[in-house]
Each structure stands twice: as structure tokens, then as C-alpha cells.
Length: 319
Image (cartoon, rainbow, N blue to C red; front, side):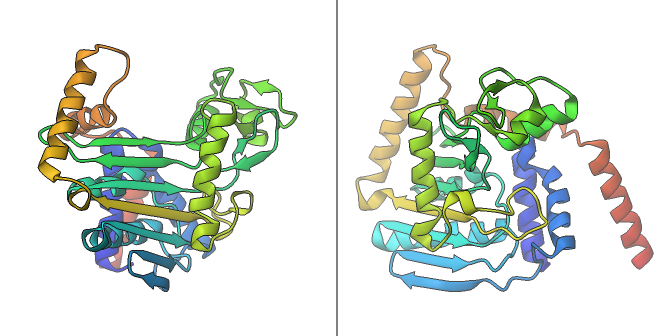
């Protein structure tokens, strides 16, 4: 890989760990290396511009690594929103992009509202079914504030991420009863049965499926991609990814006074905190987690430590 994109990818993976999203952090190096080995993921950028029409930009990633492409497409959306008020971009056929909130926050840092969504290979069932149909289809939004950290939401439309199911499988733990179903549609607490069957939407009902459907359309057919049930290559790297990533930036100054907007959002945050409810301002927990991690360091798995040790030895011998 070129140094710029390698460094950018490393920073994005590390940022996920710092914020407490370990399933999308540095451990994803194993998936990237697996993709390089199978040639389903390419270390050289051959991406191609499909559409460039004022506020809309669409790119075919040509199986290049997802993180640097996602960063560029979000940046393009932000720049176009500065001109047109709204900037929209999308990329199809690229690798997993990791933590969505990393990209949506780029917009908030420049006085914009950022919105990011993506599809993934089928893992989630429709209500009453036991067949995987939707992906976990996460969505993230970021909103700038005056003094507080940006409001940053980042969540899958499934009950949990697929990575969480794998964590439970690896640890030999039973799942909560409302997370997943077997292939026959019956609830299960077995992680393996959940992988064979499917995960529930976040509400195990119609609303979760309706939101997932919207994400699958915006991140699929709208930008020239496939429908969600045909998405592949986002978890298992024996085949190339054909999913889509969708980015939107709203430049606030095109809609209203930016300083006034930030002031209103700051007051809203204060009101939420005064409620003393179980609801936390989105992004506040990740912000606190990052501060803690920067002070105390991060713990990595023995497998990742072994990989880094081996790579260091290989580099030493190569020199």
C-alpha cells in the first residue's frame, strides 16, 4: 500500500479501539490480510469515478481497501456541501470501512451534519423468518456543538453486530434470548445457531426492518450497487465485497446561522443531562473511553501481539 493510505487506515482502526469499538479496531488487520491473500481485497487503488454531478459523487472501489476510500468520499461530500448545501457520495465494491462514526465526525468537525450508512452481507432475519436477508446495516450521524464533544451516534440496525456473535462464540458464552434465531426461526441462545440462522433487528420487529430496508436501498441500488440479499465479502474474505457505502454532509451555514445552531444544540445537551435518565448523549461514552485509553493504553489480543512480533522480525530480516 502507499504510505499515506496505510497510515490513514492504521489511524482509523486505532480510533475504533480508542473509542471502545474493538470489533472494528486493530483486530480487523487479520481480515485485511486475509483479503490480500485471497486477492478479494487489493492493496493498490484502481478505483474508478462513476458519476460526478454537482453535489453527487459515486465511485467504484474496484476491491480497494475500504478505509481510505471512505475517508475520501466523506471528504468530497463535505466539500460539495460547502458549495451546494448538501453533498452526497457513495462507493460500491470496496472493503469494510470500519467505524462509521469516524467518517460522520469529519463533517461535524467542519460545521456540518454528517450521515453515513453501509450494507453488509446477509446476517439479519425478517420478523418471523429464519433466513438471513438484511445485513447488520449500520448508520452513524454526527452533529457539531458549541463546547461539548460532537453528538455522535453509531449503531447497527440489528440487535447486535455480527462481530459480537463471534465474540460470544469464541468465549463459549450463551447469547441473550432476544438476540437471534435458529434457521427454523425459533429463538436461540447458541452463538453457532445464530450464525446458522440469523440476528434479529434492533426491535425484532417492523420498525427495525423498515430502517434497514432504507439503508439497503440508499447504499445499494441508489448508487449502482446490488440489493442487500446479494451483498457478499464483508465478513468472509474468500470473495470480493460488492456492498455499498453512502455518505451525506449538510453544511449548516446553508440552512441557518451556524453559531446559533451550535448554541441550541449545546442547550439541548444540557437539558438531556438534567433529565438524569438512562439515556446518554450519543458519543459521550466513546469520548470518555478515548480519554481513558489515551491515559492508560490499550490491551491487544495474544494473536495480534504475535502478528506484530512476527511482522517486526520479518522487517528486521528484510533490512
